[in-house]
Length: 105
Image (cartoon, rainbow, N blue to C red; front, top):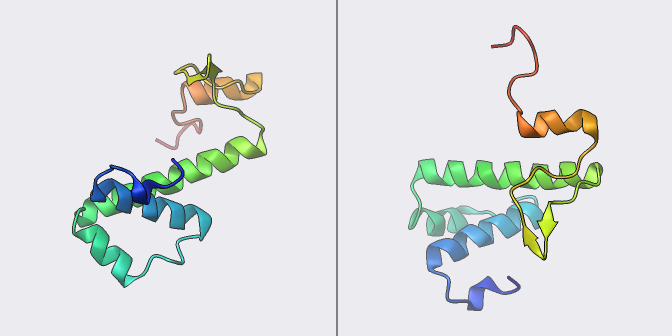
């Protein structure tokens, strides 16, 4: 979506997208007290933490994929739920990420 501000999305979603854009494009330096106050009108503290963690995780996944040139699985222009095309040694980690360090449980 190129301009979520002028879309029919509700204010809660627009604010989450604002946070996402600033987090990714500006390293969250634009997130100030006013931004947090607006977000808190629609999200609890726990929801804000969860939303921010999710944004950070997906941003990291995107960067990881760029490093290893991993492209999302797409068929006929639509994303699929199949694992992405990754080097053979990495495939099992994506299919079953679990704890790979014995004794660390």
